Length: 352
Image (cartoon, rainbow, N blue to C red):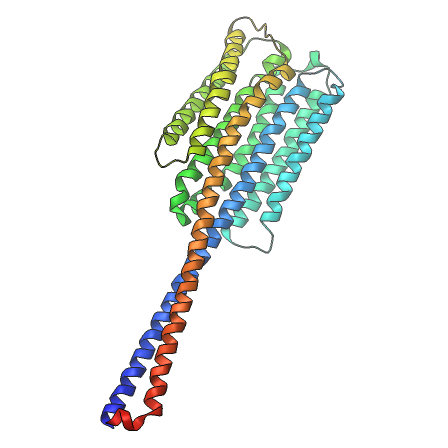
């Protein structure tokens, strides 16, 4: 009998130990699952935010075209601007859907507030663009055109804090995707700076004037930042851990934007420094320059897709771990219960 009691006590101790291990395993697995789901949510919100930023940037192209046209602007130019504004509005609506009011976590609150601030800024900038576009072209002042352009650029500045927060939190939750996320962010920034570079030429192309000293300084500063991002993206793509798709997208960006579009911009800047006799107007410039920037967006999309793929794989791994933990716990519990039942069912044999 004493031996039986000792076995029962041992069995109870074993059961409690296993129960504690089961609880800790499940808690850890559930915490990992929650972290993975939160990280994937951050990435999805980041993706939505980058698209909204892209649409706001793209809208500057047709806005610049209208600013450089007569009154009223050509119907096709007005249509392009209207379409671009509708696409931007849809992108901002998508942000609100991805950041519902009932979701009170800090990331979602920051995203929603940044989007509201940026959209209010966008409406003010559009009003400035329309005010200038409704004036006869000969009455448009370069100062006010630059002001309208800079207000459009300011919309992106309002979104950047939320982009930085979401990118940082997603990188913490998915360290294996950190490089791809950083690259996607750099590519998005490169596209924005490339757009700013074109927009800064709008006033000069519209008024057919030489570039002011301030404009020259701004353009040179933008060119310097663009070159830094180019160097970083090329260096990252040369890493052996980078996928072939990333290296191919980087090569395409270099060929299409840096080897084609940038020399054209540099030519216009040189003309603007000396004569102001530009060979293109704002619409012709956009038609030649904007399509080349799509290669930058293609690289951003490849890198973002790589990061999302890493996140989804990690989430699958966590689900698999949780499933294996649950199955293992059930098996151990079954064995422990069976042992307990045998000790209870055969007291005589146990006592012997």
